[in-house]
Each structure stands twice: as C-alpha cells, then as structure tokens.
Length: 158
View 1 (cartoon, one colour):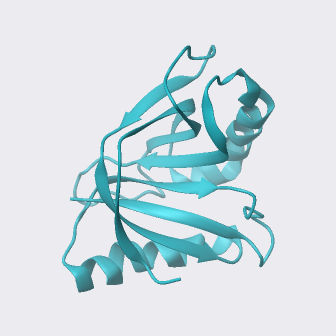
View 2 (view 1 turned 30 degrees about the vertical axis):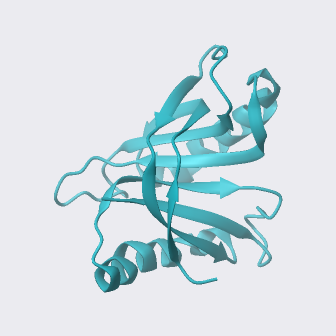
View 3 (view 1 turned 180 degrees about the vertical axis):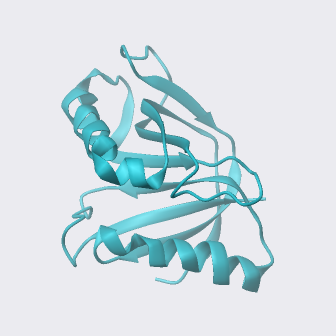
C-alpha cells in the first residue's frame, strides 16, 4: 500500500496517558501500559470497536528528539461518546484533520523505517508539514513480533 492523504472526522478516545521518550517507552513502560489497557478495556464504555489506538503527541519545538525528549503517548480505544472515564484513564478529543496514512508491514521493531518515510520523503515530496501528532491502529493484524504484522499509521498534516 502506498501512502495516501485522507481526511478523518473528529473522534474521541479513552485510555491511559503517559509521558515518556522512546527509550523509556521501549524499556517496559509501553508494554506495561498496553497490558494494563488490555486487562481493563471492558471498563471503557461505548467503544466503537476492539481496535486499540496508540497516539503520540509531540512538542512542536526545533531539535525535538523522541529518543531523549519526553512526549505524550495515549494507549486507547475510540468511543462513540464519553459516558464515563474509568479511574486512572483520560479522554482525549481529536479534531477533524487531514492525515497521511500508510500501512506498515513487518516487525514492529522496524516501524522506524515507515515513520522516517512518512515524516521525511513523503512530506518533502508532497509539500506538507506535520502538526504534532500521529497514531497507529492496532487491529487483528497487529502481531508485533511477526513478519505478518500490519499497523495502519496516520500522521496529522498542517
């Protein structure tokens, strides 16, 4: 699948929010947060589906380095509306926006290549700028340690 530009309507998510850099995320905090959400997902009312969303919100500052600088990550599910937010979780409203979307195929550990393509080559070739957040959709194709893994990626465009 080639990257393509799409417009998505606004949506609401509910889940766990953490502040960490990529090294902290990969050292175990990400897996622990993922496991916590899986174990408590039935507490989230009015879920649209069973697809987990992993959202990353970046500070728009020059020289930002996700390996060193902390940023917001939300492990969540899309909901039809916020009825109630379970203890320790947050709700987050995402505005209607244009995105570049791409399906990463292969090991999750190789996801950096797909992000480099979207944030680098694709942005340059199409004259777009990112606006500080992206998200991944983890559905039944999400098998992070398998070459059959597929992750739909969305990068918000300005």
